[in-house]
Length: 111
Image (cartoon, rainbow, N blue to C red; front, side, top):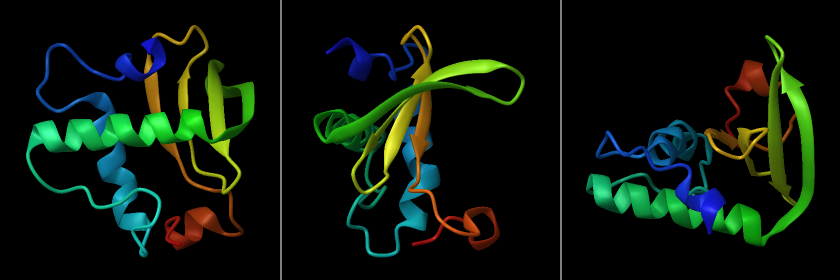
């Protein structure tokens, strides 16, 4: 599946997806969605692929929109609101997204 493989960086041991996932695991205090970000770099990379696959498998919402600085992205979300973003052409994995929540920035997106 091309959109899953696009989040692997050929010049690094830890994938872009695994780095992005490490920013989100600590926010999910129940570890129900993102899981734990532990283990070897290979294990973290595999875990990130699994989470991207889950987002795509459970997708109920897909949209294109602009981020600040006129950056066009494709965003995919599950019914729970978890998701992922790619560049509008699908070639660059941009990262994972948390469910929208009141005062999310203020609360550090912890849920």
